[in-house]
Length: 224
Ligand SMILES: O=C(O)c1cccc(C(=O)CC[C@H]2O[C@@H](n3cnc4c(=O)[nH]cnc43)[C@H](O)[C@@H]2O)c1
Image: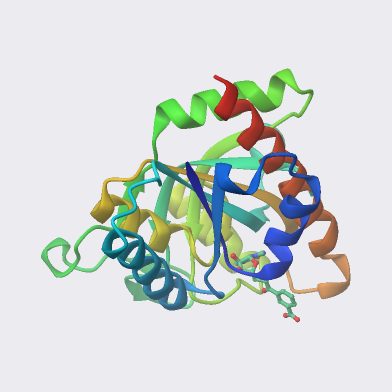
């Protein structure tokens, strides 16, 4: 079964509202916002499952919202659009200058980028497109702090050839690597990464969109 991992109750609630699957068909975990809470709570959860002798989790869905980087034309995700991660990066792990980032020496890091499960991603993308959703796929950047200027957004987008940013994805990928669990990461765009203006954020609508898409996925992937 899938383990659905969300940072907040808010992001999970809409999936619970839309889901027609029975409770024993997927499990959920709310980790808290950010990489540390995510890594700690996901590891603890998987260890507890292991110690119960349960081996029911076969894949992880990291579900939530994200900030889309501004880009020219084709490369720009729309507000509320569903995006899938092809790769995840620890985006601010490095040497941070005001206008650029430089990498740390490779031998200082375990891993800096993760390639997500392409089979799961292809199946999920097809399923949502068959259900009439226009989705996007691309690189995701996990950051410690929400980017609050268009300049920082442009720098991160360019550096990682990225679609959007979030605060948990790379941590989930790290733990899934350790437990050899295939990972699918799906997020709805709640905001653009621009000079900060919270009045333009669409958090509630994005959670709703993500929950609706996740309910479709969990039902569809189960029937394949
Ligand atoms: O500043 C506020 O008042 C505020 C109120 C509600 C939510 C926030 C967040 O920053 C949510 C962070 C949460 O959502 C993901 N997320 C969404 N957009 C972005 C972004 O532009 N950059 C990074 N993370 C984003 C993230 O995964 C967190 O879990 C603030």
